Image 1 (cartoon, rainbow, N blue to C red):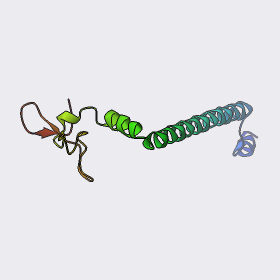
Image 2: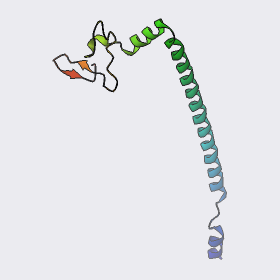
Image 3: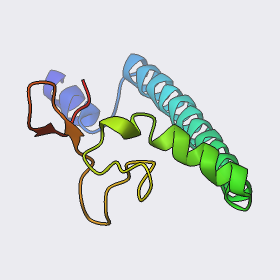
Image 4: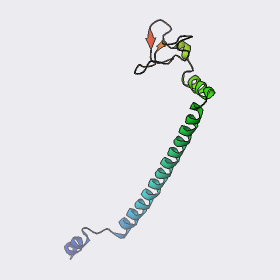
Length: 110
């Protein structure tokens, strides 16, 4: 009789196991929904920031302010030139390089 019971229970979950599985599925659904909400909010924030940057790029003052934010340490850049490159921006395809205190160059400012 015990062997018949074991064969009948194979493939079926006991009541405690069913409850645990249901609970875990509910928790997974809650976590998945929360992740989707966070991802949606992050996408909306990114879109708003992009729109603001586009608006700023339409004015001369906006472009200057964005360049100043992006190139805060322009005078330390090896590409800096007071007249030709006041922001110290690197040429296309080149990395941002800074002068090192002891001589030479580095990619990190500090």
